Length: 71
Image (cartoon, rainbow, N blue to C red):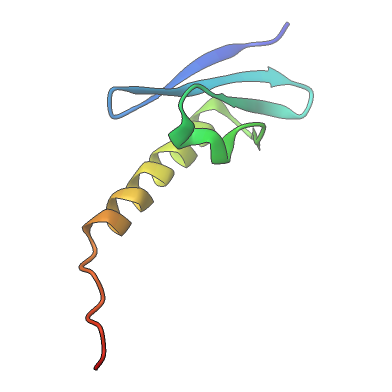
């Protein structure tokens, strides 16, 4: 019997993971998590960590100062 879990990150539903013989397959529910769509993870917790890491990377990129143009 397969197991399914909802993955939530920062009050957003990132997607679901469904177990099969290969592990847990991620199905995104928001565009922001499409990079993980169809990916396999060893556990539901690993998929959640990957979704959180994706959000964290995007926050870091947004918070970086713009490069200073050289003259």
